[in-house]
Image 1 (spheres, rainbow, N blue to C red):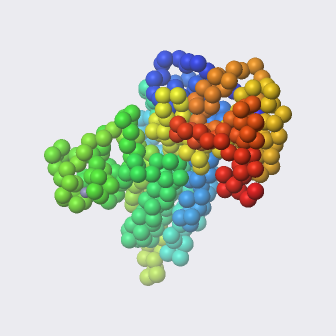
Image 2 (cartoon, rainbow, N blue to C red):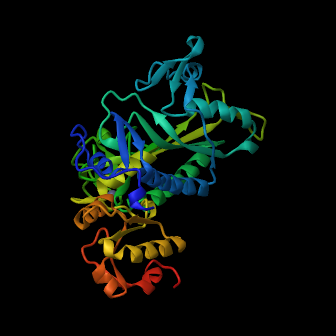
Image 3 (cartoon, rainbow, N blue to C red):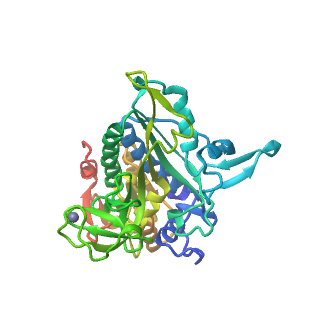
Length: 415
Ligand SMILES: [Zn+2]
């Protein structure tokens, strides 16, 4: 992509209403644009990041053996009356459809997926099953804040599993935890994201959160460095207590951002929707369910909260919009830079090429730091004299000269 053609440009400043780091950096760099509080447009660069995150999530959920589908965002009141949640959930976007029909925009999909399961699950032979979707969801937040971390409209992966027994659910639940950690690792959040015991008591086996530790987080967790597990502040009883798992270490307080949550919802929804199956012995039993959420747009905001410096974003390679930011510093070398851009493109490398003629070298370097591609590649009279380019990783200070011929090899390709 030539930067001169890019739909967006960087901004010096954005409104001071939203002071969260992810909103500041993502808006200034032109990844997202705020339409109103808690509602954002994903601009071309931002959509590339979101799509890459969702591709990772999709790959890991497919590897679990779950199947992707897409349920409607618009849901009827009747289903939420059956579950008893129409009047009890306070963040619902309720609206009137034609004929005065009561509808809502879904914040979650148990009320859709459970009756859906009823269409296809009848016997123990039909179990287990798991389906997921990646979709736009809605929460009527009174005071949305923190950029992509807490929105009124946001992207989310939600997975639902159906089982004959609690033992079978337990096994699937544990496999899902492993896949969640693979997603966080691929998004650059390895080693700082912890399985966190949430509501229902310290030893609750029914619900967990995944919390990414960062000083900018809104949640407080208590962490055992030894076991790599944490407890959410809301349930901790004694701040001086030892780790519930190893019973050795003292727990340490940290700020964190919740990047996922999973629940064994058991028969909470199969009961009101009468989702039953026939056992081998011809008995009728309620299907046991699990529900597994992960906000993909929130994950993008979390990555920025964690991976940045005073100059801008530092994208991990697998979710960066482009792997390389090629910068032609001076007009004199534009032909050489064009050639290099074309040859990198041909080799299948994703390149953002700053070919802008009316922008100063200083501004180009500042923009590159703000945008945060993993590799900055500079071509200038000095480098051309040595038949080379200057390459620097975004997170590092030292740059090095690499011969034109050696560039493919540097990026792991054959010459
Ligand atoms: Zn411990």
